[in-house]
Length: 261
Image (cartoon, rainbow, N blue to C red; front, side):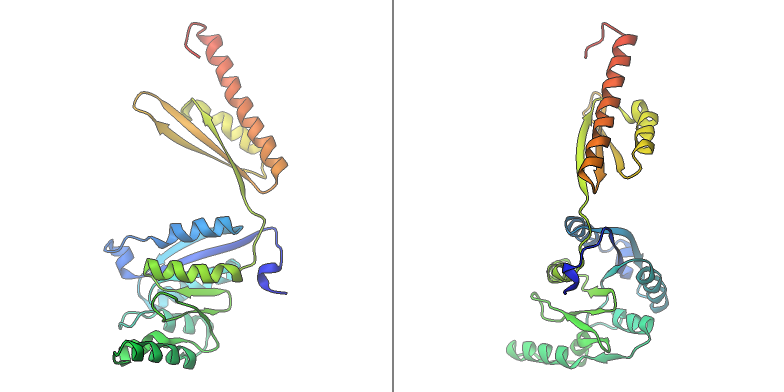
């Protein structure tokens, strides 16, 4: 039975984004949101995201913490041809295995550069390095593969390549029960609903209830989003939110009968 066909109520994941350029602000991350969207649709809960510098010890420490805590860890960045692309080395160290020039990756890259009539330099050969025993993640954009070791999926930082690799990874994953959601418009600001909404959340502990304030230039309102995995649980909590809003309506009218509805 493939891993993707094994059902589980909750499947968790974390992401480790690697690169000095992310922390300095030179590069604006586009991968975290993309991964979060696709994992949510796949029934995988993204629970934690960390961003670390191109420092081996920092990568090893973060990776070991995340891979022991969650079902999956996805990394981005640091598997290119330059001297500061040290992700493969760090992940090898975290797993206690050698970092090698993978023979199949070397062949893929050598053939690609031959077709392009370009020299397969020592720097370009670095893109074939990965922990011994890894499996490839195909890269249909620029050939150089990502890799999988244990529950860690290592992918490029370039958004176009990262997204293509994620597309190849998703079918491999075990899916959990998908999160359902329902949005309810509320004509009141968070100051009016905060205490009451907390009481609704407490009464429906199997849900996650979020409030998102809006301002149209004249007045504040709130969108209340209820999330749950069980449709009946979702319905009950959404009904409670609707009743909460109706209760505020009645209280406002009682306080000021001449006010507009």
